[in-house]
Image (spheres, rainbow, N blue to C red):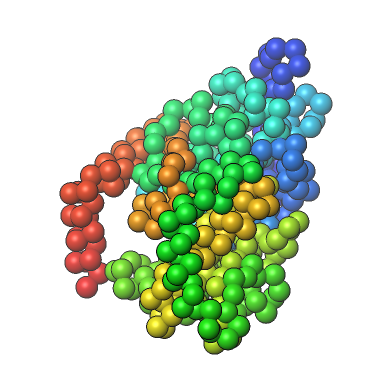
Length: 394
């Protein structure tokens, strides 16, 4: 189902500069699919987390379970050619209707899908026209909560950074891989030697090796191991199991088996032997970036030789050899992340009120997020928060 949002006369632009002339709102993924697919080409700018197949699987299982409703915004130029697609879902928070990116906790980066020339030239007036079109829709949205947006993507500034914004609570460690660089520039020679010594312990295991899961059987085997082991690993850390939330397992299993050119909506990598899957990582990839989503490693004695680090080294080399220029391990800190990722991807949040009552709500959400960032940036406050969390979970 689609509806057009009424707009006044388009904002004037410099000759040759695209501008928004019309906005359509789609209230379901299927209706938006034809135009969405148009944005999944090299002439467009998007992260792999906003691919149609990835998000339709999330909405079908997890979004439906959460009770959120699709709200997909498409902006067109004067020639009726699509300029951007902003995938959103509407839910209720403290009595207000809040529109946010779909995918929840399982997405590292959120961004509209852009026609590249429009992304490169968009102005604040263009973004204001987008907001005005959203306000004109029949869905009365109080707040746009646009979280975990990259400041740039593949060298192009994110136009939504023109809106008021703040740093996200977490950073995202990233590894930049220069083309044709030596393997030791990606992973140091000393670390390679240490991991080679550790990996030698596995060489005697029948059937041992690294694999990029490419068959339904391989994918099912790795995911079966993940869903059996991950709850145990999270319990060890005193963390809630976000993978046990309604619809999440079905979402991940569907996305991991939905093909795309060169892989799947979610790609799986693993170390395995005949007896078991020893370690696994899963993430999304495009032509320039691999972004890790989830991982775990065995509970058996095979865990003691750092299989996660060995697998990570193999993944780095796998993607570097295929022209990938950057790799991230998801938001949040972790000692193992800093072994590989020396830089940080800057990500930001925007809380945009669209109604009078949304102003106070946006201020509240922004303040809570700012407080979370302060806690995570202070070791003392973070330690206190972790102790409180552990106490409440007993």
